Length: 474
Image 1 (cartoon, rainbow, N blue to C red):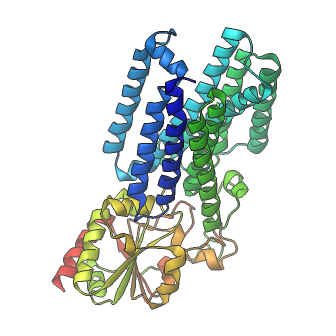
Image 2 (image 1 turned 30 degrees about the horizontal axis):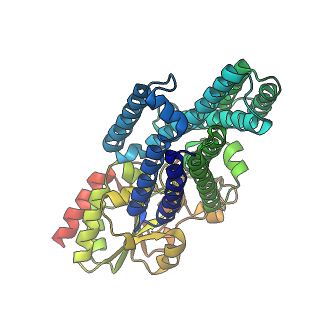
Image 3 (image 1 turned 90 degrees about the horizontal axis):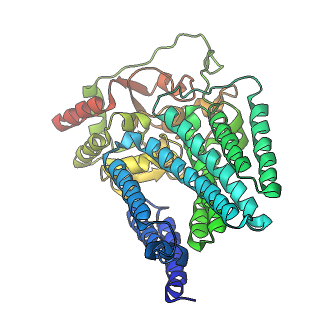
């Protein structure tokens, strides 16, 4: 064992512990920043120490033909792209960036598996034992599905293609055939050691990722991103086995496990099994309303910013419910300004966070954190629902399906059974929306027609600015 090898093991252990601690601290908004820093330190240690691996060190010292310039250039290009997008992408586009970065991880895992297989076959004619080849095949399949599926998710989120489900006859059977085909061709790789067959596996899996995500609607994108993130973690762990890198196995397993748990929690929050998310086509445009009262013309009550401002200023407590519309309007700083003005009037302000509000897990938490909203004002659905009965004003900003009472009462509604924020129990409800257009589920919202609901139409940021001015005059 070389001196370098005696350093690698303990350093990987330190990195693994930091990964675990960082992931633990990411579970709370109050500690998320420090958790992110810990994970960043762990990744830095892992990357730096990996360069001490005898194989890579051989490349650096010239013992092998791989030039150090390749490593340096690749690191600089990848790091530069990451820093640029992390600093310039708007908060509204954060889900798209997460989808792209997640896809890159899947693609990397697949390509590394193929490269290692090709190298082994070229040098010795043998890719290793059956376990090694199985890891290569599965890493290629899962990584490719994660990559192409994430790209489709990005296109849907960026609205470059419709976020409605895109389906064709026999699609589920077609996808099943693709999955079985990729495994069958993978069997050829296992038995015959064929490099072209492994590339064929990659191609089939890429197609499966596309056809697997196309039929999933925009309402389910948070769950889809979580599933694909889990797939990337599993692919990375399998690649770790292939290249015999312990920290890659640990990090991949952590990502895979946490992504799986998050997916299950989000599915529970939507009261829908994973199979329903993947195969139901939820998010398709509804043509007959919610089922009850379809075709009946109903009237909403509209309010002015001045009237809403007075109601807010004289309330004892206000619960703000952020949704994707808040992110689209980039109004997080304005809503924080409104909350500050209300607190000057002695009003208690809280924020109600639904688990699947926005376009990715934790979207609203990240959005409000950017505006330095105090962590103790953020309340999850289970914490806040019991307080709506005593809430004077619930201010709904750009949220739709997550506050729709039809989820509790209308058995014909596609969101029936989904846990929602009980804002309709508040004494007064004010909804900020651009128009009466439905949310991702494509259905009308019963909340808008309730006697205690008032609508304030317009861009969320402009409406909130008017509310701030109105509160200041009280």
